[in-house]
Amino acid sequence: MHRILLLILITGFTQFYDAQELNCQVSIITDAKLEVTTTEQQALEQLEEVIFDFMNSTKWTKDKFNIEERINCSIQLQIKNIPTMGTFSGSIQVLMSRPAFNSSYNSLVFNFMDENVVFSYSRNTPLYYAKNAFRDNLSSILSFYALFMIGTDYDTFSPNAGTPYFTEAQQIVSNAQTSGAAGWKASETGKRNRYWLVDNSLQQLFQPLRDCMYAYHRKGIDKLYDDKKDGIKEIYKALLKLKPVVQTRPNTVNIINFVYCKTDELKSLLSESDTKQKTDFVNLLKRLDPGNSSKFQAILN
Image 1 (cartoon, rainbow, N blue to C red):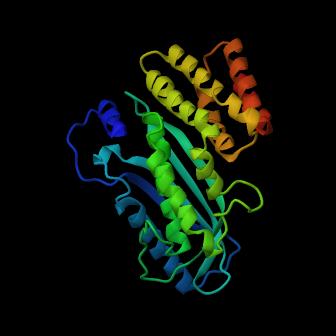
Image 2 (cartoon, rainbow, N blue to C red):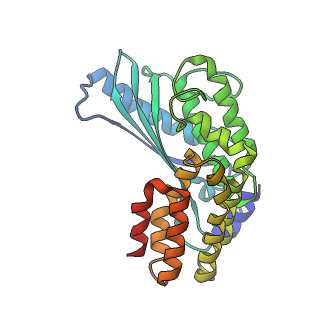
Image 3 (tube, one colour):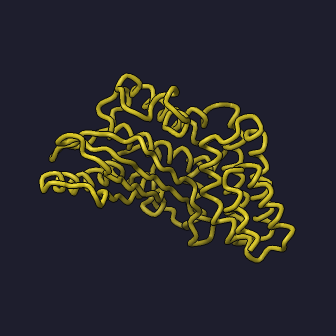
């Protein structure tokens, strides 16, 4: 509800309609070298419509949304292999943004490439969200990201407002543990999967990241229209909150993903800043994500 009240201020709308939470654009692409039969192509074309309906028609929260207040996001499913008839494997890229106060600008908040996607689908099969059970891998993956995006979005409007949705997303992870599908377990190679995305979000160690999410957007991005200089200062202060997390747990997926989302935004925001302010930001970003130091250097240009 905190998000709804704040969005009234942002959009100027006060009348509610029974819209769903997400405004999700969906696309499915196949690898150029992949041979796809006519039947498989028809199934994928239908699946694109089914996913669109699933993401945008499912009621994910108890809050009421005006149609203009829906969370803008997109899903691109890339099919790289068809191991057997009706079984598809590939990756899914998930993006989500939120509006800036008194502006048409949308700030990118989440941009994640999930390489662990394998699912079965046949034509005329609907998708359903089962809160307390694992039905199939595709609906579980989509439900996970729907709830994770909502939780992330809510955190940018009110401190820790996303907790119920992260908790529900974590339940999806728990339900999927016995499925044998990739992306759901802590023990998998690397920690760039669904398990760690939501587990980190709910750990006390990562509370500074959630504090940063709120401060960056509500005290920084939403202030740019009225006072750009002060808004940029607040953004810097918000990013400073991430230092203790990085010192304790460097190179975690949540921090890397957040900094990745904000790099181009910061370069644009700082285009008219003096050299000292740009340098301060670049040095901080390099400490937060040393692996992308060369990309941050472009902010100085």
